[in-house]
Length: 307
Image (cartoon, rainbow, N blue to C red; front, side, top):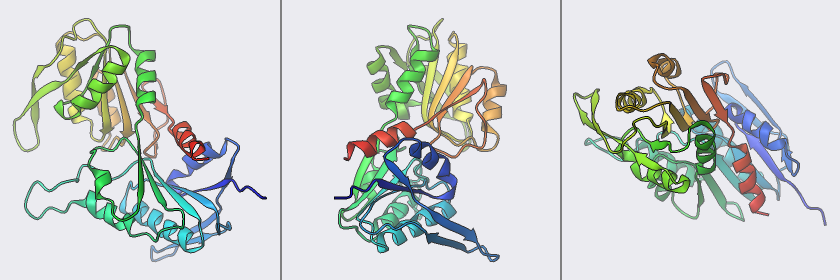
């Protein structure tokens, strides 16, 4: 009896993760033909035979275009006979739009979840895999018989924190919103946790009013699930520094670094190093300030555990 390897596809912006996964034996590369017509419409053709196969598709919803690319490709893979499909979302976009604050606001995280839930079901089910979602409630937005896995990048965070910071460091966050998650990390490592209290000055500005723990003469490792513009991170780091912190490091799962955020963080002069996973496509190379940790081993472990 022939035993088929899982066949791994990726949308264009996530081919780097596909390449890393395929470095390990046991997986087969899914071949695609992709091009764009002059009017902007996307052409996709599946070149590999997927009938009766276990299919893996990697693609984050980093943009509306990427979201439709992964949806269209997943739909076609299912229609061409995939026995099962594993949609791996290293980054799930619109995760901060998970509830309406003002009347009439679109809860885009839920709209995206409902859209992806509408994919036809394979005979062995549709499996969606996420990494460090911004909100624990997002998986409950998916409908029907979708099977969900939420993978925490805690092994990466704890490994890097222990490598960079001195013994007795403090695990910290930018605000009380991530306090429970950071407290869990701190407990696992046997260190203290800290977070800052903030008050809103205006619609676009907040200021730090106090810190929950003593950081004097200690290294501080700030964890946040995502860094976009870096403003909250810089303000928190300055507060920890003003409270007597020694070296400050930052670890994030999803490093978006919009609007020159990485340069602003570097120029702030209060953060020694930024560490991010490659869950979000990086167009910046690693250097002495930016360290990039791959989630490919975590994806491989997940897929291998299915056998």
